[in-house]
Length: 303
Image (cartoon, rainbow, N blue to C red):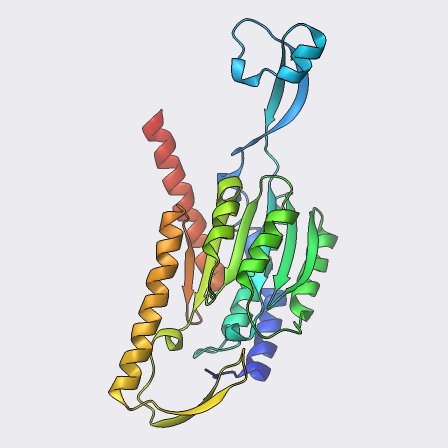
């Protein structure tokens, strides 16, 4: 449905995009909360000869066979975080009933995450997609890289209108070479994304950030309204005052919501949902605080 107030909303969003991300750098999003995800994996450091007490599962059998004596692979815990932010820029996000549409909210949240990541001396990368992958920027460190990412995000105007979430997730699995923290920012109004999302979740820490507007699920009793599908361009006249129309629309919205949460629950993911024009920075801070509290509780329980 076309509720796009893009010119005014995008100007406000662009202004806030350049200002708001700088607040969390010195606040709660960065530092201790991003560190919740550190040390989750390990990377190869060196080969050395087997010593009594070594875990036999670390024996490199190929090297052992060549050398004639056992060698083990030694690993070090990964402390440096690689964060990749994938942002859906399809037309369905250019709607919203609040002061800012979902597109502006997603860009603000993405910029906040990237600034927080680089402010924590970690690497940040950015993938932008619509009905195709519009751009890919490899993860790097440094303030200059943070500014570059923000500019790329702010200026991005995708050629496509539709959403190929499945294709974007597949591409993400290809470009994420090492274990990473993946933020996927979308309204998730797309089919067939469970399988590639499952593949990502098996290897990486995945956080879906869902942008949802009340108009995605319910219709106001506003009488006859001309609506246009932003992704297909199709237009039609709909009577929003018809209880049957509203009931069918709400039932379809509920089915989408239930299916989305079924996928996330099945894959063990903990999504962040941002509804309407709620402050995305505050939503991120609260999300990381909850994650930090949950992980601390699990550590205490297993001690």
